Image (cartoon, rainbow, N blue to C red; front, side, top):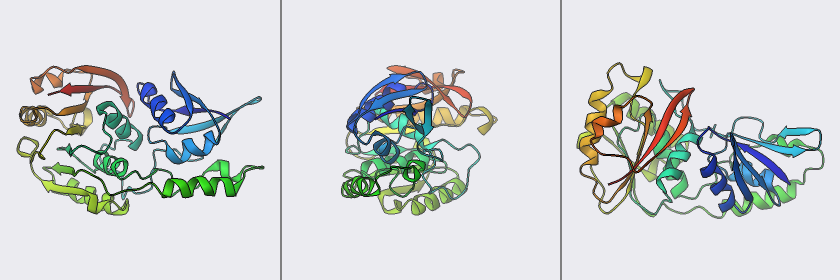
Amino acid sequence: MKVFCACAPGLEPFLAAELRALGLAARPTPGGADAEGEDAVAIACLGSRLADAVKLRTASGSRDAAGAPLFRRGWRARVGAAPLRESLAAGLLAAAGYDGSQPFLDPMCGSGTIAIEAASLAARRAPGLGRTFAFETWPGHDPARTARLRARLEATPRAPPAAVHASDRNQGALRLAQKNASAAGLAEAIRFARTDAADATVPAGRGVLVTNPPYGDRLADAEPAWRALGQLLARLTGWTAVVLAPTRRLEALLEVAPASETPVRNGGLRCRILVYRL
């Protein structure tokens, strides 16, 4: 069974690696990853965090196996002013090398997308378990086989081994993030706090920071927020930080050079995933 999994441009290597970890043979290709293996359609739809769509390769072309976009996890109470796709949030976590075993912090959590995705990953909750997909209505589909796969994935969740912290200076954003976390069933896994990024509490030990600071239409003047983030990064010795940045050079305000950067698109905007080893 051969499938094509689509993702945001720039995330192709991370998606291919994820699919391989799920047990499929996969390689990156422009716009996504080609994968094959037993039950590839079901595995990709149920288990992939980075894919936006899954298409079965056929002799006449491809068939949409998911139906609705995969990034819609089903927990979002309402769309915020500048929503980040859950699949792109998962891509940022992949760029950070986050596996749930390290302390985690998003100091500009907004509606909570990154923190919720981090908590879900740390808890080993397959992202597609609460959904049904188009492939389940296809002639010849074996419901019992898919049910066995679902049961296997449902047996993997755990309590997150390290704390997931999320904070924001905006009380309204924080309330929305808490509502979203409750809808996702992860309210107990995330420690929320209202604070400016510069003053965020840093968990003990070496950890991972992933955040999507304001830029573009989100804030007329984003510079104070980026300066606050820079003050926080100066306190994170030994941490890995991943920041989603626009093409213009706001990251200069962080006063630290990234170890790597990956071009990506967020809602049609050209951005970069900046990785810092602090």
